[in-house]
Picture 1 (cartoon, rainbow, N blue to C red):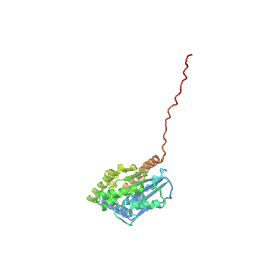
Picture 2 (cartoon, rainbow, N blue to C red):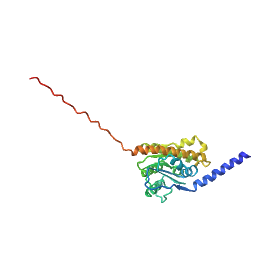
Picture 3 (tube, helix red, strand yellow):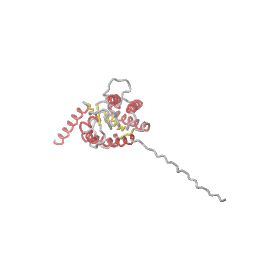
Picture 4 (cartoon, rainbow, N blue to C red):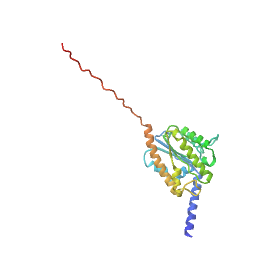
Amino acid sequence: MIDKLSNLRRLAIGAVALVITIGAGISTPSTPNTAPSLLILGDSITWGTEYFAKSQKLIAADAQWTTIVIDGQYSRRVAFPTPNASTKYSGVKTFKKLSDGGLKADAVIVALGSNDVAIETKEAVYETVIRDLLTTIGNVPVTWLTVNRRDTPAIAKRSVLFNQVLVRIAPEYPNLVLEDWYSSIAKRPKWMAWDKVHLTPKGYQARAKLHQRLARELYDRHIIATTPTTTTTTVPPTETTTPTTVAP
């Protein structure tokens, strides 16, 4: 009886957490044009990682990034393959809005795709929206987390397809690194909430620590990308001529 009550309590807590997570969005404040700046652009999972596990605080503790903006919104997609007026539900339009507001992102963690695979089914669409966002972000270091959504067998297959598209086109973008979140969470099913989309408290803690690690790696990549390279030109030694004495 006690075990049953404990299970019910855990389910209730999980349900409340899920309602809070999918019912809100967040964008942490930033000071325009304050560099170096890191942007984490995501959906409700990103929102939950900040709300439940304080990912911004973890990253700030490393004292590397001056500005850390975490922008998570429930139901946000990478982009819309057809014209759509929404800004907050499009990763591309949200990035443009933040840029117009003065945020110059020096590096970006992208955590989008879960809502695209729930609606779109075609590989060509996945490629279109991925390229759209990467082009919009531009030539700064980017880390993209692979998608892990398993609420139906069909969506689970489309998650794999979306990730395959990422892997296929990644070599075309030297500034892009993929983080295999799909495989990480597949090995740890207790990180996933009962809806097979969001995370448990333990999962959000793990995700926040992942954000911290990726932020450190991106900072190193940012430093390398922005440090001027110097080239040393070797000048050959000047030839000297020894006078020749000619006997009379």
